[in-house]
Image (cartoon, rainbow, N blue to C red; front, side):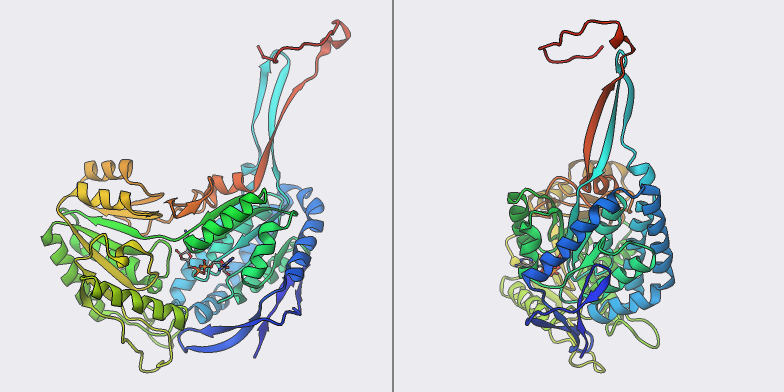
Length: 503
Ligand code: NAD
């Protein structure tokens, strides 16, 4: 069985680690290859290589860096189907969804291609008489990305295109559950002309991550994953003096108002709740129905639609499935445990996905689409992130109760409201405590030229990913105030001991 290696200094590098983990095809429920879990020394070697590559890369003109990214984008487009198949094979999501994730990643590369404009800094002439001021946005050095299983292409591409474009070098530690895509990205970057050592991939688990968080040569850590790990990453990286952005888990609510277009709302909720088997940080996992009539319509509409859903492997010969398996047997067991808890705690289980199997893929890690009604805030299925195809309907008497629920929740990643009323929508966007808000849009993932990030326990650190925040995260500002006084020849300078002021 193939063993996935590291990619260091422009080459696939054989690992000497004695620790190896299996990589599954979740639709088949069988291991298809393995991955080395790197030793601390191997991670240090990758950091050393990235550190050595930094001076030359950071002095490469931004225009030349951008041209390499243009080439990389062209290669990603050419290889789109091959890459999407690899994502689908190791993650389980359906092929068109894997293509969609690639598109969202490619859009960040497109954004990073504009780095010559984005990294210009600011300039003010005549801030004082004969005095000019300008800023440089300089790269940091070695940056690192630690990424989750659920978007093996998009999430790394939220990070490294901007880090590289701004002149940093990078060490990526992808999820050990589906690491193969990261190596393909590294190869394509090399094919696009990226100098060796600028982008490196180390595979591994906590042992590898801990080196990235503590090695003094690493300047910045970007993390995306579950909240407990995000908190850990942020605290350790910050304690070691690193810049850190750590994006965590979510429990995304939507509010359905009585005036919402129910058919459109149902279609939106179905895709957002069950797409990618609910393994999206922006998945809608709670629908708050305002009024019992709305709730009853949602329950019957969702039940009908679930009955028509096609669940099976991500890659098929004929018509594509709507939903694939979840990532692992352990994760499947965890989701089923949550469903058990929902039943024990008194929620109404309308559709039960616990004993779901796909006849052609009996060993696959499938959970059927699951629907709960009459979920209440003290239940664990409401409070915690399930990260599976489980939708909870909460009944609220009015808008105020609904929005208060969202604002009191520990997570604040994405949220949405379905309504025809502009005033309600406007009020909602003003007061809701979440980072990304949709108005009749179920998964409001900002485009690459805006920034992505939640509030509350969905993010740790002040800057979001991509967009202007991404550029700020990977650069540090240097502000230069200069005077070229022609009067130097004429004046007697005795020096001044007061705080300089201009004007
Ligand atoms: P995870 O937290 O288990 O793993 C994420 C990364 O952290 C992986 O690279 C993993 O190897 C590493 N890791 C795991 N345990 C560690 C430890 N003890 N110490 C150091 N590193 C460790 O997350 P996952 O299961 O791969 O991904 C799903 C989670 O990611 C969900 O909670 C989801 O909401 C979240 N997510 C959030 C966003 C966002 O933008 N907020 C986007 C995607 C996924």
